Image (cartoon, rainbow, N blue to C red; front, side):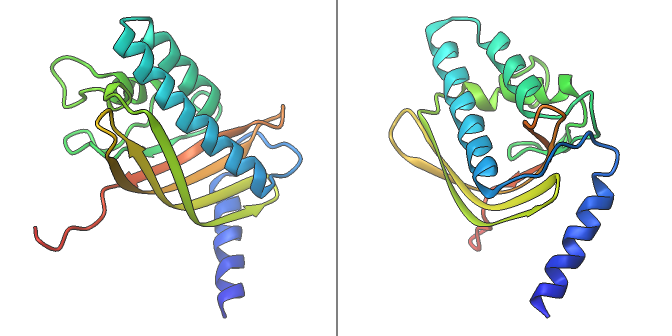
Length: 177
């Protein structure tokens, strides 16, 4: 029964991503590499922000390189978003990562993160699409880790690079609230 469910999810995912550009297939390692690139990008943005360097340009590069804005619809539900929960445009994603005065966006990527560690509960690849789910851990400047739950969906572009078309992350449930 589980295999049927995985196949159904894969088929549904393929239909969902049908409007995106496709390459030659995605490996599990390609997803792990994309996750590493994403985490390193967040850390680089934080370092540039701390130094007073051009962190905005690095954030723009991060989004342009790793997300499919302009090529496909991107469904992005960031962790620290309540008023503007979903970020369907490049500018909305940029605001979330670096902050915008007068909005709820304080700049997630500028919070001084020193490391991002991924723990995948699963990675599923199907032709030119992939899904990954699990927890990622952000190490703050104080050395403490913040655990965040995530689901990412990827498509492969014509160059073979993975692009994020689904990014959902949230803080784990806290039963004391």
